[in-house]
Image (cartoon, rainbow, N blue to C red; front, side):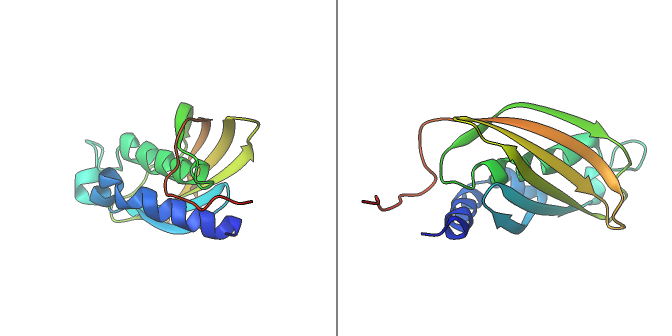
Length: 145
C-alpha cells in the first residue's frame, strides 16, 4: 500500500465514525501523508453575538484538519496540545478552509501547523498542534514481510 493510499484509507475510516465533523458539515477536500485540507460552510448556527463565526467552530475546523493530518499513517494519534491565534473573523455563509501540514514527527510525537483561510484567501486563524501516537490502528492492514 502506498503512503497516499494509507492516508486515504485512514481518513475514510476516521470520518466514518466522526459524528461531530459530519454534523458540522466539515468535508475532507484533500488528504495525504501528514497533510489534510478540510472545509466548512459558516451557517447561521455557527454565528456568535457579533454575527461572525464563533471561535469555537473555527478551532473545531482547525483541530479536525490537524487530527486527519496526524492520523494519516494508520496509527491512532491524539492531540497533546493545541494553540490557536484568531486573526480575522469568519463571515456568515463563508466557506472556511483549514490546511494542516506536518512539521516534525519524531518517534510518537508530532508537530503540525494549521492555517484557516476565508473564501477570499485571507488568514482567519493559525493553529499549532502537538500530537501523540498511542496504541491502535484505524483499519486492519496486511502485515508486510
